[in-house]
Image 1 (cartoon, rainbow, N blue to C red):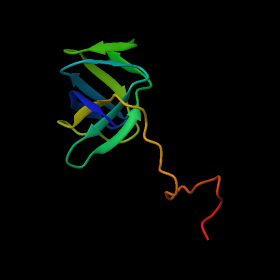
Image 2: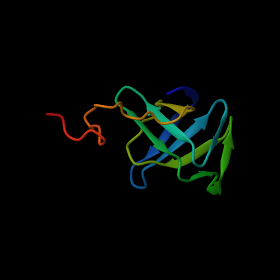
Image 3: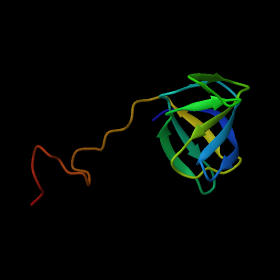
Image 4: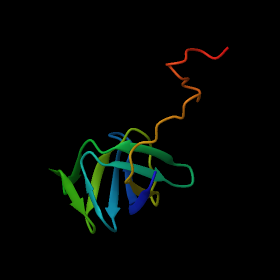
Length: 105
């Protein structure tokens, strides 16, 4: 899946599980899929809501510091990449199985 570097994590609030991301290029909107990637971090999720200066926004641009609620833990200096392609579907015959052909014998 193609990705575009859009910013870095500058702070993480453990209690509410919120990452503050400094956007360095591009735009970010509610509904976009983003990947957090660092030395010990690697997860992807959809942006459900975000805030700039404690105000809910639908879209943010380069230069903004945006707070995003996330499920996993992020760390300062983690890269934030916008996933630009469609989600990858598992290949037929993968561990999820091929529901049309039934279980493998």
